[in-house]
Image (cartoon, rainbow, N blue to C red; front, top):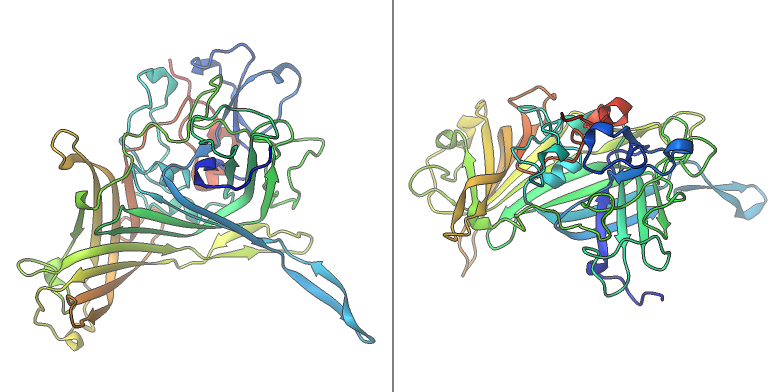
Length: 459
């Protein structure tokens, strides 16, 4: 039966661990799902022969707490004209289509950030009590920039928007290969080009993500031998669509293990969303702040919103012989911006001319806590942390009108340092749960290395 419309209840957004393979974890036929010692590895290949009926666990993971998701594409053409004819002879495609995806979600425990490829260590435990299901390594590097994995990522990710039957939730729906039940919008070779975080009075803290990709397609099943990856081989320029060998495909299972019959897209995190009243923003060197607003001590401004914006513009590198670019690299140096909006209380004595040679930098720490169910107040342990280091004052804008409080908008800029630069850039810490039967998904350049996906064998 055809759908009359598509609404949010019937959609869920998923992400693959890289672009060109390694979407499935395989085990020999007859192996128990709980027995990690016999898992044979992770691959994107459709196996034949002895492994044809092997257990398959999908590494295509749901992104949680999504609030909106939009996608688009445009085809770039060059008209071919000649003298003697007014209309064009042809309109030729000379480069890859431009595919876009943008979405936002409520911040929780950092699990989405980790799936998106940010370097964000976790203190979270396993998803269940059966610890033998899980590895104790999140593959993130403590103290390293959150963007370190993004900068050296040449693989990108595949994104999948699953559409189920009209009137039914994706979460809890019965898995099926029927063409009448599910469609999948598959986006290949997706690279993040903008990431921003906003926390404000009166609203739940959110993150917004913009992705640029090379390809988009629609499949009418959620799994199967013909569900080829949407990605394009950046070296070969060939799409993975059923050539003789290898054949790469994907399957969508949600958070649940192989063998379960229903989809789980909500996840097991106890955090549904974080309240603005449970956030703590700390500004280092606030007492030596060089602007006109008071940010420290009695009379300090009352912060209403805090935003971290990290644009990551990318350039497609091309060469003769390739229709698609062979890489999509971040334009460096990379600058990020921190914005604060506050209700003014006191002005401090300052002369902006005297600060022109000032080298003061500020670090911003945004700690997001959960809610204590027993008291209704802020929990004692944080769920997520963002830290911006090495920010410098760029501007202050004061606004005042009849009937309104005077406000100030303050902008700081920060430049991202190298992966091991611990004094400049964006840093994250989370509490997301550990992954199943496998060290967590690889970051950066390791996404394209097969050995990075080898299962961790727990004694």
